[in-house]
Image 1 (cartoon, rainbow, N blue to C red):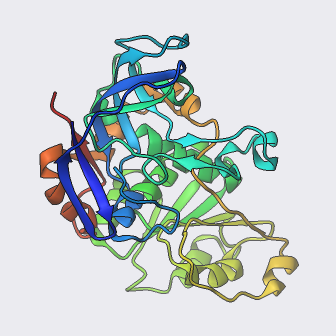
Image 2 (image 1 turned 30 degrees about the vertical axis):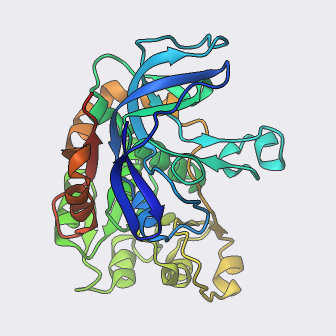
Length: 340
């Protein structure tokens, strides 16, 4: 089969590799139809993910059709249209016992620890697939996974109806958070230096847009909130230095959600943290959000049609990756499609 293989950081290509095979009774074989490109995939290409092992096939936002099942599979059958939930957990550690399987001590992530979906075929346990309704295409359905990330982030940030939310960054994940927060009923402020991305945030319902290169973000946000500050701040830009000023800006009892995996250290004062009894809340992948997002699809189709802006055949992956890296482009979600 054809697959994009990252042989080592900075060295990757499309090549023919042996297709995966079912080796356990609970596994299914999926004919991959489409896979979205995520920032973590681009990081994997360059060696920016310290957890990744090589060689590796990237791609975790994948949809397809089941074409084979192990002898013990009961939940799905050949012919089912599915999306893959790309995490595997032990079910026994402290995090799993608390229902936070996404933070499992032994978490395995598809496209980081095991091969992913930038390939024609993929094998996984049946517990990792969810059926897709007939009314959504494989290409649009790839956006379900980033929507689960937005849902998880908003749950961790305790976003509620009537809240004011500040999102730093309007890339694909920032847009997913924006969409979820608006559906909850929050007012959303987006800070983004890229004009095309600010425009996209406006189309997805942002109430206020800020260009951090042209105005003071904190001053503008305080003016918009009558000096109170936002209830939740998301760093979807991946800038650790945003943590300290965010604590100063947050409303009392507010929550900061730093979404970066950047290892660089940042300093902060505990004074605003305790004086305002703030929460700094990590978020990773998602836990139990796939059924929720899939159930919401009938009311989310217009959003998804705007979210998936570009599709490329697998063979044009280099062009797709270049477009993803261009923050001045009109792209939101870029999808690779497979030919069979």
